[in-house]
Image (cartoon, rainbow, N blue to C red; front, side, top):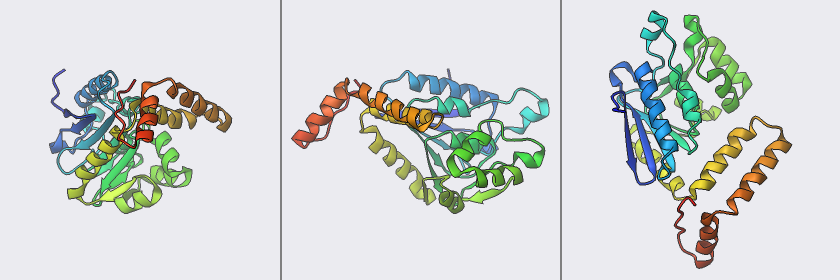
Length: 250
């Protein structure tokens, strides 16, 4: 597929997605959703990619759903689930406002690094809608029920420092620092054993839907699976020899 609404690049073990509709604030369109679905499928089939970053072109990360879809009453394009289903760690480099479906996109990522001028909100209720692309489920899981309820029911928008204090974002940086910090975080993570990265993500995501006892069993099972990998042997060998391990994802 030829990409027009986004840019996808690979550098080393890191895949970088940039939403590329800056004139509309990177609003979600059907075309963008289709291209993102193709990229996500490509990433999951590409063993060379260990970590993914997502950013927006221009001044905004993503301001939400393109209003034309509502006016035409067409089926709204979904994006959150396809991001959640990427089986590698995903870092959102939030270069500006993340609102409505744009925040739902960010919530679907595993880590969120934001610029200090960014704002966050799910204002759909103000227009007579509710968050529909994961917001009502993901936000409470990340910041807790009470504040999530307040943000969703009032349509409140918060700034980056408030988002950090709530645990909505992991780091707040200056605009100049954003991509270097996101890229370096991705690079460091990509040096870890890729199978272990995927299993750690799976343990956390699936474990949240299980009882504690079930989650502990899942964690133990995934840990056991890692014992059969070549990467585990390489990790032990590198530790003993005091050298940097060269993981191959096997």
